[in-house]
Length: 230
Image 1 (cartoon, one colour):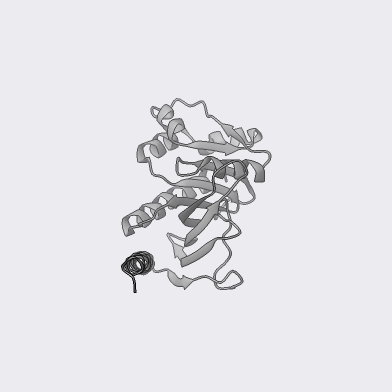
Image 2 (cartoon, helix red, strand yellow):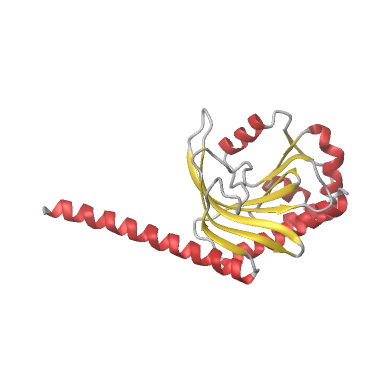
């Protein structure tokens, strides 16, 4: 084999080995998370499986690949966590590939909620364009609040919903909540729609600490929604 071919082969083999190691590491992280919180774990997810309810949301795409699925209940809330690789495409923008971790929590006290999205800088312009196309009533909104960290909140997060939902948004995003979200400054997007709330974060190298923070943050928001919007 010529030297240049041998070198090309070595580089290709190294990339494959790196990908396999990365997949193994991610699987181990999610599996440990599932064991810690007493959740049922599935390494792969079949889209038509009755054991793993479909998770859509704004991170979904026609070419998505879902894996490392956890399902169960925690703190009396039914929930599911999934690793999702999907492309974000929209006309006029560069298509990008992302690895999301999506936590879905079913609400207990409120149902049929309108679409509300609190995005972070992890979401690209194409991502936001897709949301605005899918939800024609949604607009970028800014809340007038007295919270100490209001400016920090609006600088780090983008709030999308229908202007008609402003009274509901003020009930949910109180001064205290805005202060807390700005203080945490987690890269976790919040997507409320119908009977559940999703939390989305991008991570090429996840950790158990990240997933724990995602879960605790998600439960805090879910409880706030249930108590304030009942």
